[in-house]
Length: 211
Ligand SMILES: C[S@@+](CC[C@H](N)C(=O)[O-])C[C@H]1O[C@@H](n2cnc3c(N)ncnc32)[C@H](O)[C@@H]1O
Image (cartoon, rainbow, N blue to C red; front, side, top):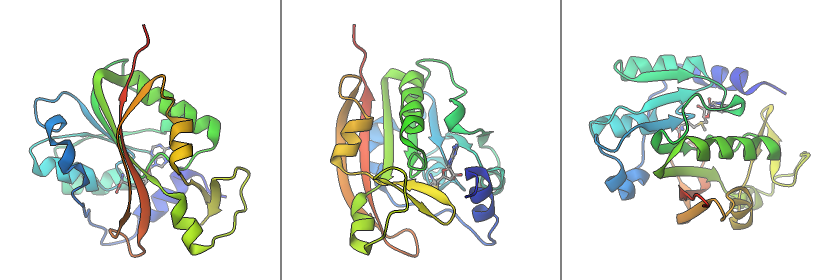
């Protein structure tokens, strides 16, 4: 097995990588403008979403475990603020400080306890009027390909030396407890950004506070 840092640094060291975005964030336009407040791209990679936002005049805070990814992103958007950290060790933001947190294909690499911990940290840092925009691997991706599990958990599969978690509606409800999250959008679809088509879940969640 590799560490996530090793795996992603190797992956982002490949030459000629350029950000490519689809327009999944269009529907959240009312939340994504210069006056929205702080916008974080968590697990930003080389900046597919950061570049989308930059073209709308928004400088997101670009966060990733991979220095290689952040180096490439800075070559593309020199003005961007990058922060290198491992989200499994907590998020370096104050409580209730972030308006929109985007986690595009970046929350599905962890075991169950760690996934709960990361999601709880996201809840902690989001403002009351904040929004989590997130895309996650769908279980239908592996069901369709007939992949075999070598995993210690049913939905967590080892591949290329790291684990990847796969989600269905039940898993989404399991990790995003309805007592503290309000689901405002959930949709499963195919993405053809990569060489192989991906099936993923897009979800938008608002934090809830119980008084
Ligand atoms: C599939 S890539 C997605 C990149 C980008 N969000 C996108 O949609 O193009 C997953 C990203 O999550 C980052 N990542 C994985 N584990 C992480 C961790 N523990 N802390 C911070 N970033 C992590 C990786 O470095 C990588 O950039």
